[in-house]
Length: 426
Image (cartoon, rainbow, N blue to C red; front, side):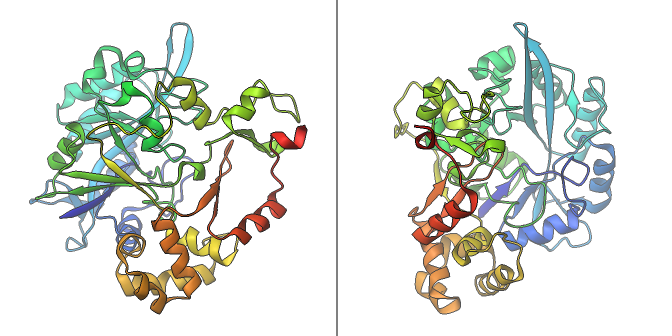
């Protein structure tokens, strides 16, 4: 069976998260998206854990969880969370986010008992813990060898293992003797597999992709995901496929174009300055407008650590597919600012009703049937995204990238945003 999994999201007790992020709503929109496995997120928060205990029931066949009030629904849940560790390494402050997967609510309770010694779990759905990365892994793995820990959004400038401001240059430096328990790395929105393939020291780790969603809207949840082909859906099957980097079971990841991510290029949002790595280096990573330090983008950070040229593909690697959320495709084609407008929803609903869910529209729907269902231009846009024939104006310093599906979109975007690059200062 094909399993499409988004294992990193947040519940309603995390900062900057929709208060509607309840299990029922998550399950409803996951089905619309085409996800059949979703992480619960935030099991470390006592109130969210209580909601999980009250709203989920363990499925006897898979060991995973389903909505207790609707056990026939196709969406399963895995018990997951994200935590932040803050510690000092070689006299430098390190702030690293990690995703934790665990097989049951019972083991989640045991993990919480251990982590509560290092920070207040009630403050945020993603708690900040006064402990090192190796300590975190040791505590989690002592609860159960079936648990899994991996670094979250590995390249974002802040709070990540390779982050430009408080990260490391290698997995081994971060996790030290506990690296033996680290089997995966989450790419994050601003990087994709080809960028990570440029570092030979990452070859032994499986690359996973998740949305880190703070809302249930389908242009957030599942915007990145993992696609498995399993004989039987279970926690152990999914985790083992990741641990062993098994191409037979772990087929590919769904990625947004990394330029779509909010930190792909180096820049300064307040001054509307967006720079490629070469341009930023020419300026000494100093903003040409305000003279303050630029926020170093993921592409520049990868360039610093890479030991392979762009385009290198390792042997026996798991594949990937670049996609954009369907709502974003429709909005960009129509030239509207938000994917949440009724005009976008009307077209979105028509496509989902016809094909069953969003991923089927994006990946499997025949071109001719698409054209018979919606306006030809919308259908063409979906096919162009599927075939990788679009461009994205890179995101920077917290600003999302802008997909350019048709060339007139680029002109409209440039007139509205007036972004600055190096040529504007020469």
